Image (cartoon, rainbow, N blue to C red):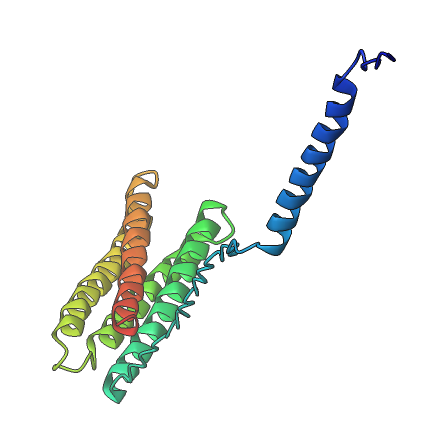
Length: 203
């Protein structure tokens, strides 16, 4: 009786079957995923908020206020401006005459005549400043004008003192003091005119 030789390694038949099963399972799984893809993949829409920047244009409005001065006020301002020029001329001639005397460029009689003429010029200057004056309806101008009249009179007194100093027996101290006072009062007079004009035209 013939003996059947059994395969000493029966697992060799099982392994291909396992591999075939795995391949079949993998194929089925992949195929199912591919054909039955009911997954809703929704793209996340990113909400973009657009902020519109409101540009506010600042309109700079320059308001120019034109103030028309009354004719009588304009006339008065022109008058005191002319008086300022006149005072400057008076001061220049006094200064030159005094320097000529100090530098011995003029004789005593010439200096005396010149200094005497300054008194006449200053007296006329006082009358020019006094009249006609500002419009009476403008109280601030009336007050300022009164100060100008006071200063004009002081300038006049200084010119008289200059002559007294020239004819004095001292060595020139009295004349020097009178000249110093004359220059100061003249400067105050001119400053007051500038302030008066500025106070009216700047409003």
